[in-house]
Amino acid sequence: MLLQKIVAATVLTLLAARGAQASSFPVSLFVIDSGHGVRTPSGAPLNVGAVSPSGVSEAAINVRVSERVAALLRDQGARVVLTRSFVRPFRIAINLRRDNRSRAALANRLGATAFVAIHCDSSLDPARRGYSVFWLRENSLALARNMRAALSTLGLGESQFRQRDLAVTSEARVPAVLVELGFISNPAQAARLLSPSFQDVEAHAILRALKATFDF
Image (cartoon, rainbow, N blue to C red; front, side, top):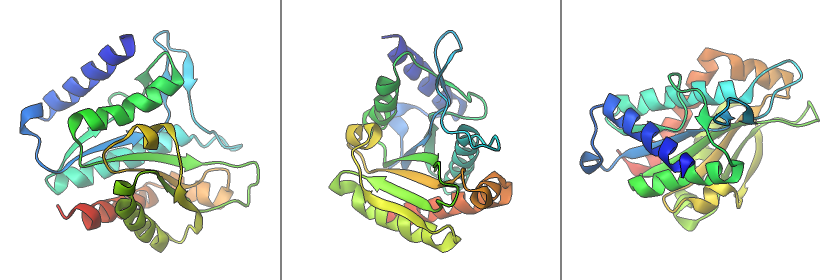
């Protein structure tokens, strides 16, 4: 119940800040889920995400790229709900699995055009590289393919492209993908992922995939 109240309050605040009411959502409404960055009500870390040996934080990159994607989508006239933002960099939760599912459930409740979870990958092998795109349901396949096509132009290499039963892809009934932007454990890719200019490049690739899929 506490988690539901927190999620509801966050959504209402975000919508009010943009002058939006639930009844006036246009067709193009996107939930952009910045992975990790979760704390308990006491402030203790619950889901911090990966941190590379050099100190690169996945959670920090995720929110920066998510914010850039949101700005690009709004420039196109779309509505956006962010699950984390610069204003609210941490989500509050008491159960990790329920938090993961609640974010996709939010997209379901809003009748979102699509749900996009943004993450970075990590490995004990510093040579591992590449983006990944995961989806589960058939209604997500077109988005997954367009996301793969857009990210394939960035010179990262591909790590994985496959159906995967994750908390967010399983819970989502709207088209949903989870994107891994690259490996922060790979020094070369970590340097690119930390670059604001490359974060912008990745955000534009995600925008292209969404526009190619939903024609907004």
